[in-house]
Length: 451
Image 1 (cartoon, one colour):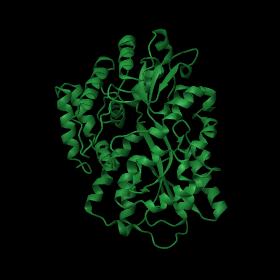
Image 2 (cartoon, one colour):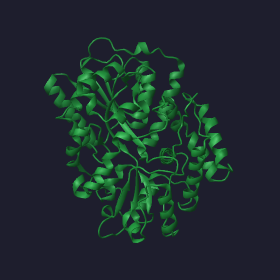
Image 3 (cartoon, rainbow, N blue to C red):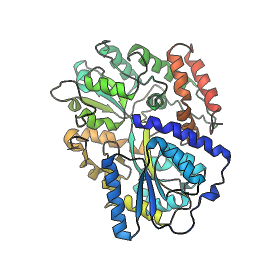
Image 4 (spheres, rainbow, N blue to C red):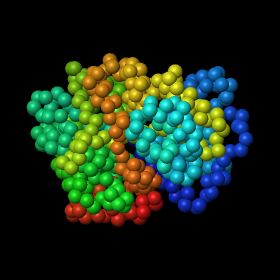
């Protein structure tokens, strides 16, 4: 999770850069390039090798050369802005959802080409949720490739020993927290409290969604000053203050504590699945357990508060085609997502790249996860667990995107507005949840893209 924290500073820079009023029509690339250029933030050597293999296969089949340019995720937004200003955009970009809408609104992405690619591949073959997140009027801003949903991981063995229900509701989470808590030997749950970390925003947003606390109200206005949001703030403070460790908690501590057996519940991305299984030397399982930790872990993909049905926070990635790109750019996108290539793309990191085309789920199940050691997903986790992981893909939820406030969400993450106010509320500087909700609302409304 930590790698994404560096992304938001650049995203904010990119958003502010567009305030200079650049004319999106100047970004077209004239003529046919000698080769296509593909920018990717998947820069790890093993992932980069897979992407290079795919593009070499494309060249062998079409005769069109492709230059794969690795761009660190934290630099991606600012590099795109600079390239646009210099009329030097790449042809194809691999992008997180959070950046797609901002780029589309500023004319950097070719929605016509993306929509045509989706149609050629078969719109009906894509999960509807990821498509809806990038819907722009009657078109799509980019083509969905893969995604992951945030998970609540818990010690299933401890829950069973104490006859505790699966933590898929606020009531069940709180009951488990009260029952298992034995600080400082055991913290019953750890939630994000570090205001400088994207992780805290993601975890808080998961709880907000779980109680129907929305960024935008029915009138289209940003409004967190609602009973649902006030209840979220109250509940989050209870979990953070009474059952989580003191200090600024973020993804690193929660993973370390869970893998050491020092906490019973955490919120994390599925990228932890290979680490829990002991396949990464730089993130070891330090608890000595037999059977091993991954066989003791329960997984909840969506949980519900008193005012909502179960919801899962999700991150989706896309292939974007730049405005003015070569017509061959669409061919490359379609090639990567074609039947004979798509599983190779997902193989970069199957634990965090769930297929967004349902017909590929069975093939995905057979892919190997891990870094220092490898194992098939199905060798480590039961069919029931895998079904749970995959089931949420069509219903990933996020603040603001469906309401057309994607750029606003980018500003929230980039400025850390919500997490800074949340921290002050947790520390008692803001006395009531209602006051915190009102301050969040007023602060967000002043951000770029949120009015």
